[in-house]
Figure (tube, rainbow, N blue to C red):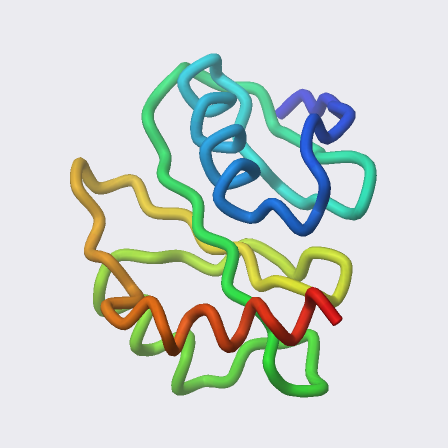
Length: 116
């Protein structure tokens, strides 16, 4: 599969904007493989809708726990990679993926960690 590299159009701290941008790229046939502070690496393919989720890393490990992977997998989310030690990147190809965080207050606590 051919690869392409794109400059990130948003700050790494703008997770919702990055998630939307990654998803928009999938509709152009670019599928996220990995990303860092500046660049995103995509594989080229047939356009299709993929929803991406950036999960804040709360522990010391750059690898998600087996429990996290299992619970996300149950809702159709596939782990892609770690993004600059700040996020775990997940992708979902279902039409309307399940919302992973139902309590915005709890989720905001995780984002506060990376803002400091």
